[in-house]
Amino acid sequence: MGGNSRVQGYRPIIMAYQLEIVDLTNLPPADSILSPQEQTYFKTLRFPKRRTEWLGGRFALKQAVERVLSVTDLAQIEVLPQASGKPELRVGGKAVLLAHSITHSNGFAVAAVSADEKYLGIDLEKIEHRIAAWARDFFHPDELTENTDEFLTALWTQKEALVKLLGTGLSLRSNEVCCIKGNPQFAGRALEIYNALGAPQITVTTDKWPQGFMFSVAVGK
Image (cartoon, rainbow, N blue to C red; front, side, top):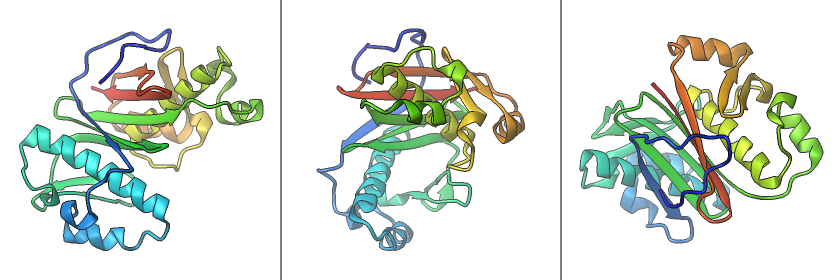
């Protein structure tokens, strides 16, 4: 991953994952990379923006899996939606136990895959100004140790990466997942899910990457 500008208060660590980023304005034709089942789902997406983001995320993830497993045909790699909201990864029709996560924001899609980490979540957001009411609604007061645009965007990515690690989709309330000075904290249903996963040790890292964005990775052992 490019760049070394890490958010203050977060420790740089080495994590074993494959990362791919793609430009959403330069994607291959859908039928060249999607399996028949993926193509069927892709055609149900009505809005162009959603179709582009969905295809870009799958393309990024397929490229990451290709590097890890040396699969030459991207259409053999399937990323299919589940009721939980977390996509299921298959290769040649068989489920693959690789931790994986997808995110997209403002023209980019990013995917991460790990054969070494059991749980993985990522999130990318463009650094933008947001009103104070948004911060009060989305974050716990203990999380708001700063109020700069960069800090709030980073904090948002950290929370979203943790939600993706838990594999719950968008079903959790924002105050059930907190990240206070780099330390994840869970409450309510999020805590129940975390404990059901075996209470893994989670580390969150955040980078100012690419330029103008914040990117966070949460991994659990």
